[in-house]
Image (cartoon, rainbow, N blue to C red):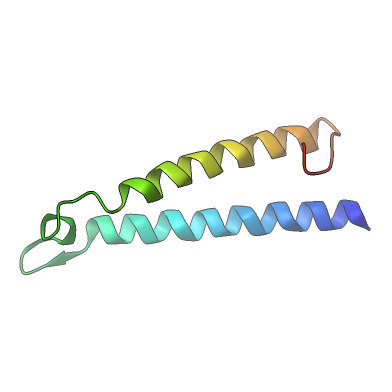
Amino acid sequence: MMKGLEKGRLQDAARALCVGRAALAYARGRESFGKPIWQHQPDFRDAPLMIVGEGANETQRNVVVGQLAGRGGPDA
């Protein structure tokens, strides 16, 4: 049963990353008053999101590789 929970958590994490990527892409492409919204407040507010997102991507890759290699658990 625990193996199923591990796979479910991995799937949930992958979905959350995809939603975050989609939200960031939408915000980057959105315009108001004829210019991109990030130009209204150019203080790089999405930079921390991008950094966290890349860290999450790397962690997810490591977990997937661990699962495929048969190493389960939080240290996968």
